[in-house]
Length: 518
Image (cartoon, rainbow, N blue to C red; front, side, top):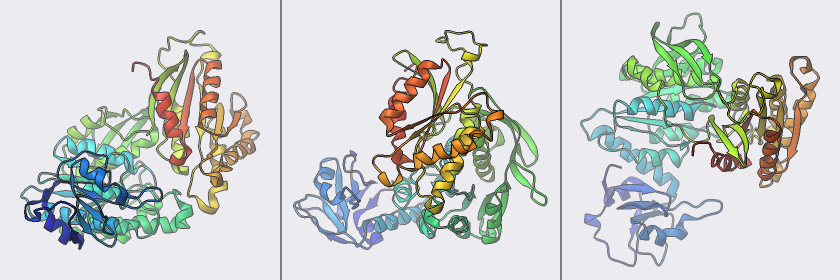
């Protein structure tokens, strides 16, 4: 963080000082870090007390003081604490105001150039952010969130990590309703805005895809006009994203995988193939020129468009094409639980795990299922007790799916469609996992099964055998089913996919603790 005197912090958030039990020389006090976690050790930190559904940060001021915080942002005076308090009406809004103050300071006070990149979309934004961060950080100091810090708390906390020398700030921007991105861009006004896709994620919260379009358009609407350097990067393959060209004054540049009459694709990919782990390879085309061959170390053909989007960002920021290709070919650090493939062995039972448990919506479910279909398992599995070319050694693919949330009135239909996709893609087994912690969503696991069963006869001639369907109540039963199926099939590949509340990410962590070579 750019070190800031405490009086400037108070003025930026419009707060009022209240001293704690110890006298504080305010004139010499500065803040060099900000956090909402009182357990995080720091030095000269500002603790932001946020009242959540289960935990109230105002109860942890003394813990924050013990761990190096010197002041707290609160919405009411908290007695019996040593921390200096800055009292505001709303600590989350105040956090945003402080982040905007730091962004403005970075733009105006320091000699080094600075560019802010906003990324949004119904699917792919975290992976695109991760790839963009990898490319840009290879050439200059770059700040970007780890994971999916893309809301009204995560984005300002990331912005507060800016330093005097930060060259690029890659801001992932999510939305659950119209107005969310408008608020985020008021905190971190972008110079470059990237729109990936308008899909069906959270359609229940928005009410319609048209409302999702309006919400996502708020990013390009906020960009500076072209005469001031604003650039909108739009996915030409998505009709709704293409419409956003009419919603911005910025210079519009196109990326995509399919040609469209009248549109010049600044960046695209050609000759796309995948390997046995469904990791895509392609030729990267920039301004019509083949700049190099790329082999991504990310499972899933659908990530090609994310890599193309990231390459587009880097290109408009004048990163050399050779560097872009070099980084795309490297083992980039990605956020956890996103299409990660590992071979594991539990008590002598071997399987390949495809962990995509960060979250789930119909679009990412389709990508996960297609990724599972594309995997062929270990190249030389030593544990096979049958001939590698025998039918028993063929990959046995298992989709372990938890419910998708926030889909509204379309929820039942969309879950049944995913169940049908499992059948269409030739997956061998479906394990539908309930959500005991969310009884109102528990029935959605049954809709996966209904969708699969309704499609079974229609696609029976295209499959090598019937779909093995299991309904389990929780992740413990899912673990048992995975072990049972893997013990009976020597080359088992398992996809774990579901909304965060399904608990499948915890199951993935438990399984990954048995990863081979660890």
